[in-house]
Each structure stands twice: as C-alpha cells, then as structure tokens.
Length: 110
Image (cartoon, rainbow, N blue to C red; front, side, top):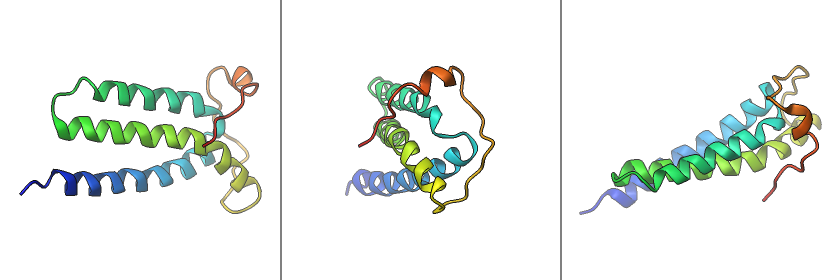
C-alpha cells in the first residue's frame, strides 16, 4: 500500500487550514500591503520545490507556496472584512518597506 496520497491530502488540509489563520492574523497586525512579499515568497517556495528530490518535501513546499500565493490574494479581501466589522480591526499596523509605492499597485484577487 502507498500512503503518500493520503498523507499528502492530510498535510495539504493542514497547510490550507493554517493559511486561513495566518491571513486573518497577518492582516490584523501587518495589513494588506505586504501582499507582494507574500506572493514572492510563495513563488520562491514553488520554484524551490522543483529542485528537491524528496517527494514529501517537494510536495509540501509546493503546497505551502500555493497557499502563500492564495493568501497574498486574500489579504485585501480580509482587510475589507475587518473594516466592515466581521473581524477585529487594528488601526496601527506594521508597514512594509516601500509601502508608499505598493499603495499605488492594484492588489491581486482570484
């Protein structure tokens, strides 16, 4: 029997579940302007997974990278949900480097 598919399914479910948590908390403390950095990290994780020979590590890096890319598109929507009162809103957020340039860019969405 090959347990790889079952294990990868549960690991993917866990990574996606953590994605919901970090998007909510990340937007609360850092704000949505960090989306380019999160998107870049996701792309790097997926790209790095191509060069890993271990199937488990490669698959988990790819899933984690895809979760980061999804999260980068979800940060702006989470900011809107926080502003309308669905989630706790925090006024003082930690701004990323080059925040004034990032504000001019359109945040991605799926």
